[in-house]
Every structure is written in structure tokens, then in C-alpha cells.
Length: 429
Image (cartoon, rainbow, N blue to C red; front, side, top):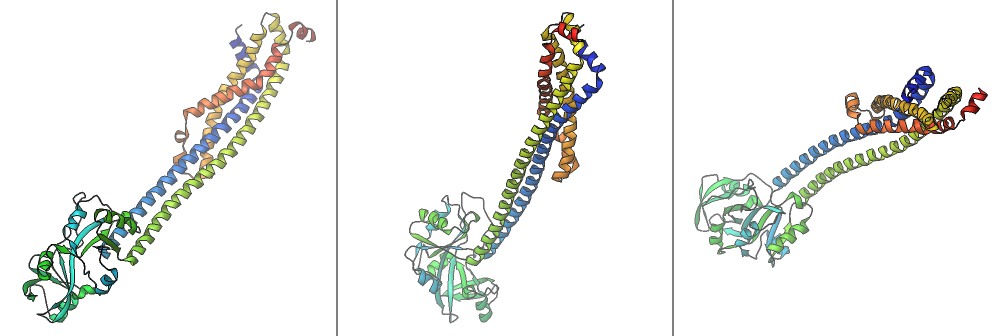
């Protein structure tokens, strides 16, 4: 009779022992697969949480950046580039510079590779007497923003003043009764009032803006300016040192000052909120990683204990089976079965039991892992289905562990059976 047929007949004859061993193997394999499934459910849950927080962080950062951009645009120009020899004390006291630099400086800066400033506006500004109206005003000549050739065009912060026109500050047009379309004389030249500003509560209220070339003619400063206004790029907020370094590298005969510190402080506060959102995401990742490590350690201890306990139980069942089958072993040996065949007989049954128990344990562990994930992780049942948790490597591992555990646990009893002398066994029986 073939060994395989003997194994099948022995299993059908001793069903209880086989079922007890099968259950033990299934528990060991199920414990391993369940732990692995639970860890995979943890990883899936972590991925979902991180993706949700990353999406929330992106929305927060996009909103903050948009808010900061709008705040800075409302603030207007916050960087002033002045000639290097200009005294900052005089500049702050007089509201304009007494030193001048070539107008082409602004074109040189616009054509450079600087990315820390935007919206370049050349300006010639001076406090003058308006003899025709017997007023002291601040005269500003500007030609409009200079386009940066290496960047996409942006909407200008200020519109250029059309040739032959002027823009008048609030206090001047209110006190002098000026309105858009009026013809006025300024330093012997006729201008048309293009626009009258609303009240700003600053020196702008006593300022008159005219085209830069006409201001240069009136003031005798052909081709000269005394300031370049710019807007600090978001990438350089709170880092005016970098802005200074970049600008002085291109225009070494200049100096840079920063305006609008309160608005910058608000921008920095918004930046800190964004940084906190990113830090929260990092903390969540670290927490999930720490939790996974703890569960992995707990699972490894539990699986080891269960596997050892199941192995001992299988060894006990195998030993009992060998003792119960002593007469059968003696008959088989008397019929010519060699020790190797007897060993193979018992180990074949053990491996078969391991494979069947491993398959059952895999299914049990997959189901149990999903249910535990719902309770421990708070995961949605749809997110931890058997399909989501299934891993081909797990079933291979379960079958390998189960068959090896069953074979190793049955090895000593099988060796005892194979070494029995048939004459001695038959004499005792």
C-alpha cells in the first residue's frame, strides 16, 4: 500500500486527533496573519489620515499665501532702493532723496536674474514750491512699472501717469478745488488733471504725480532718479538681508531699505500658522509611526507565544498518535517498511495538516484582522475589507509557517516511531 493512501486512511480513522492538530495550526497561522493584517490596516489608516491632513495643509497654505499676497499688494511697494551715498536720516526727514542715480539702473535690475523683488518702479521725488498755486508740494515723477523680462507679466500695482497729465493728492484737490479734466499750470507747464486720489492720511495727500520724463525736465535732472520702489517677493519675506544682498550684487552703488514692518509682521504671523500646520502633519506621522512600532512589538510577542504553545500542543498530539499506533508501526515494519518510510508517513501527515491548517488560519486571520482594525483604528469597514488587506506574501508565509511548525513539532515523535524495532513492538503487543 502506498504511503499517501496510508496517510489518508489514518486521518479518516483518527479524525479527532487530526482536527485538534488542524485547529492548533490554524490558530498559530491565524494569529500571524491577523497581526500582519492589523499592521497593514494601520498602514492604510495612516495613509488615509496623512493624505487628508496633507490636503488640509495644502488648502491652509494656499489660503495663507493668497491672503499674504493680497495683504502685501494692498500695502504696496515695501522696498526702496536709494543711491549708496544717500543719508537715510535726511531721506526720512525730507521724505525724498537728495542724491541721484542713473535711470537705467531700473532696467539693469529688471533684466537681472533676481527673484526676491517684483514690480520695479523708478521715481524722481522732490519737495517743491508750486508758484502758480502758492503751495509747497511733493512732486513725483514716474514712468510706470518696468517689466521683468525673465518673468510672466503681472498686473501693475500703480498705473502710469499719461503724458501731459497729473494725478493729484486728496488735500491738494480738495483745498484747490481741482477735479479730473481741469487744466492747471505747474512750474510754467500746463497739465490736465487725470485723476484725484481719495484720502490716504499720508504724504500722498500733498503729492502731485507726473510722467518721469516731464519731472526730469522741470527739475533739471535729465536721465536721473532718486529712488526705485519694489515689492518684496513672498520667497524673501522676513529676509530683507537676502534682498539687500541680491540687489547690491547687481547695483553695487545702491542701498536698500524696507517699509511696511507692521504688514510684514502680519505676514510672518500667517507664515507661522502655515508652519504650524506642516508641523502638525509631521507630528501626526511620528505618532502613527510610534503607534505602529508598539503594535508591531506587541504582535511579535503574541505570535511567538502562540506559535510556541501550538507547537508544544502539536508535539503532544503527535506523540500520543505514535504511542497509539505502536502495533500498526510494528506490523508495517514486519511487512518491510523501512525507517525512512515510517518517518515519511508521519511527517507527510504533519505537513498536510500544516498546509490545510495554514490555509484556514490565513482566512481566519484576514477576517479577524479586519474586524480588529475597525475597533482599534476606528477605520471604516469598507476600507479594511479582505480585498484591501489581502497580500499574496501573507498566504505564502502562513502556509510555510504552518507546514514547518507542524513538521518540526512532529519530528521527534516521528523519529521515535521510525526507530522502533518491529520484533520488540510485536512481542510487547
